Image 1 (cartoon, rainbow, N blue to C red):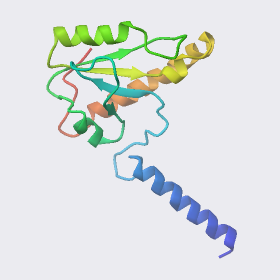
Image 2: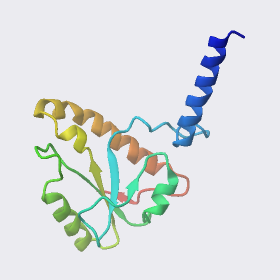
Image 3: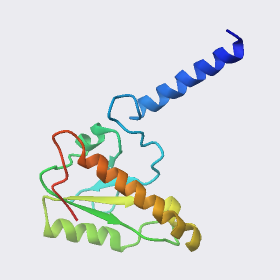
Image 4: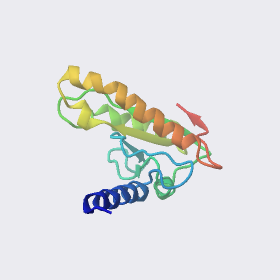
Length: 153
């Protein structure tokens, strides 16, 4: 085998192993979520401001580590365009209000700040991609064996 062909084979195997190690296509039935740029943080009643626990699509352990309650209602908060590159002040206020109303619920904040802080027309164009990220995340949460989102708001 020519050295270039061998190099291509080795690179192909290496790239496949990288994908598998990040929760990609390694196991049957698992999808590749590496292209999702939005982040999904499960906020807590104790900390409504910071994204301290990330739910990572394709990584089931992240859901368990964040203590996601599959028998409770789930709310998803998605911010809009931002000039500052930071969450607007209403986001933690809404998270706190949701936990006050539904103390046992899950409140997930979708972070798309990197895309949201561009010039408005550019950010507006990204909203379709963010919507796809959110849809894929929710679908992944829904199809996890033995667990499903009870009530998504």
